Image 1 (cartoon, rainbow, N blue to C red):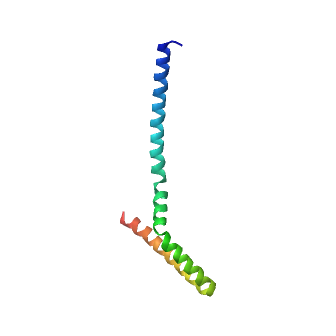
Image 2 (image 1 turned 90 degrees about the vertical axis):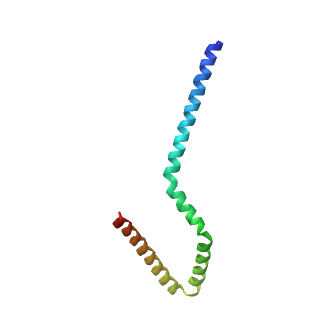
Image 3 (image 1 turned 135 degrees about the vertical axis):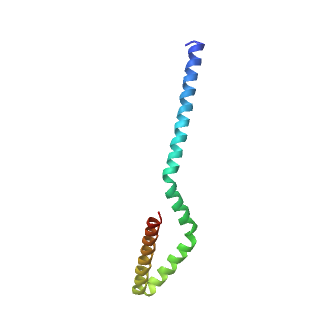
Length: 96
């Protein structure tokens, strides 16, 4: 292999590496765009981590003392959460 062939091969490989880097950059951008809702939800959950851990601890202590009452309150809380979530969704649909 002479110098010209080596230079041509080197140029070809550098161009190929550059194109691969550009493709990876685009793929990374697409990946971040696709996973943005999951990342946002995770950050929101981590923001509320300390209050949630404390609440679950209190709920567990209450569950040991009065299981039936705790079950009733959990059922009511879940129903309220689902109702509020459904109302927000309907509000967004109507607002469009």
